[in-house]
Length: 371
Image (cartoon, rainbow, N blue to C red):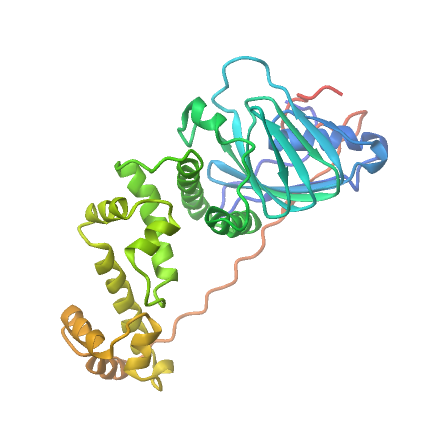
């Protein structure tokens, strides 16, 4: 342990504080060592090359369960990772990295990737890695134990240094998710943070299956990964009258037959699920006093029904009354004003400053990086 305790461990509570490393308060001749150790503590032990007079950056980290999130703003630098040639340790990490600003090149497992803003790449910190950032840059990353996706060594080697581009279906899904998780992680209560971390790992399993050119197997684990994602997609597309199984399957890179098999395990057809969700949205909107001026046909059309008569039939079959009867009953139900929810405060960052002495050793860890 370092003899200098620069910041205490977070006390038990509803939220975990973030951690901030910044070079601007570091003496110029110590900045490179400080910045190397800050990056090494967050990702893995790293060698970096950067001129002392150009070494500048900030690093913010927080946790979501087993997942660490990190935002790096830095000047140009070169990163090298050369772990010992042994079997990977159980605590080695994978990094899912989004390049927000600048350009970068990443080399691993015999592949080289040129990254532009919006590109996402996976790096395995258990194996040799090279990354060059020729210009000032910003990245947002998820860091998690490499054992959690359970992909095997061969699977991991096929995922690294293969960028996911922002215009692709996977990029469209992952880019906003990764950005939101990194930017808001420190505001989540711990229980919600753990749940969000599990969802992230599930989505990474889907990403792995897609990148490896595999259709997920028909196992309960595969259904657990895919069904939440598919249901979210359906909810987002309910207003589209052309939403159908072939559209859903194509968007998720699976066959229509496999899509039907997933929903068969839930004892409902895909089309029935879509109809059920549309009815629920219509029922909710018809009960809102703010929507009293909207016709029933307009509400039905808004949520993807093309025929008002068909909508009325399926609504009555589902709820035992017509849409008009439901609206009238809801209008005569006493309204209870919801209580105001307080805005969650932004938790403080623990700002890591250098201790007195010749070297800026970081809090709570042995100095692992050679000067």
